[in-house]
Image (cartoon, rainbow, N blue to C red; front, side):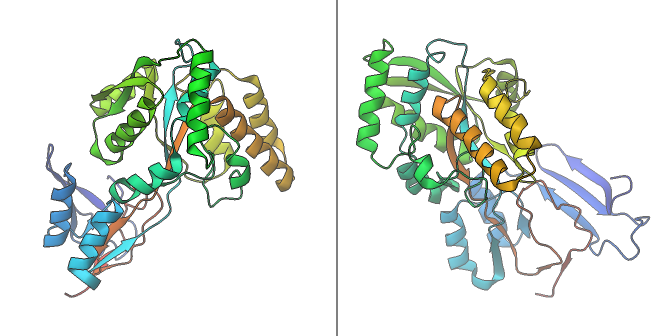
Length: 339
C-alpha cells in the first residue's frame, strides 16, 4: 500500500478495512475512486443482503448459483454476475503412511464410493462445485484427461452400482469387510468446504466407512495439513497459469504441499519428462499419464472443480474479474457510473 493506488486509512478487526486514494500514486490521474472499503462478512445470507441493499458494490469471493439466481430475479439488470472460470478444485489429501490408507485397495474403495456425477448435480446449486471431469487439469484445458479415459479410473465411471460393488469387494479383500472408522479434517467454512465434506462422508457410509467430520478453524486446518496431523483432510488447490509445470508440481514426491507425503517415482519421472518435452502432443500424453497414475492409485482423492460466480453492481466500470478471487484488486481504473 506504500506505492499503490490506495493507502491505509482504518482497520476494524473482523469488520472492515478502509483505504483511501493515494495522492502520490505514480500513475497520473489514477485511481478514480476516493477510497475503497472492504467488509468482512462470513455469513452467506448477510453477504447477499449487503449486495441486495446496495451497501456493497461487489462481492469478490463467490456466491453459489442458487443465490445468484435469486439475486438476479430480484435485482435484474442492476447487478452483473460473472463466471471467470477459475482453475480451482476440491479434493481430499490422504495420509498414505497411516493404516489403512497405505493399502491401495482401501484408497481405491474410498474413491469408488463417491458418485462424482451425482455429487455435482446435487451440490452445484448450493456450493458452486460442479464439474467432475478433466482429472487434475481443468476440464476445459487441452491437458485434461478425456472423458472416456477418465471413466476407466476408480470413482469416475458412470455405473455407480458397479463402483459400489467393487469398493466393498476391495475393502473385504484388504481385511475390512464391514468397513472402519476414520476422521475427515475440514475447514470450518460453510461454502464449499462443509457441504463438500458432508456429501463425501455420506457416500463413504455406503461401504461401511464411518468418518467423523472434524471441523477446525482455518489456521488449525492449514497447520494440520502441513504437519500431517490427519488421516483424511479436505484439500483444495488452484492454478494461476494452467500450465502443468505450475499446476501438477504439488503432486510430486518432494512437493511441500503434497500433504499425503506419498512417494511415487513414476509420478516424479512423468513430471520431469513433461516439463522437458517441447513437442506439445507428446507433452499432453505425458501430462495425462501422470494424472491417470495419481488418480488410478488414489494417492490424492479428486472431488470437483469450482465454479466461481462473482456478483457486482452494474454501476461498476473499468473492471473485469480474474479467474482467482485474490487477483485484480488494484482497482486503479475502476469508477462508478451514475445511478
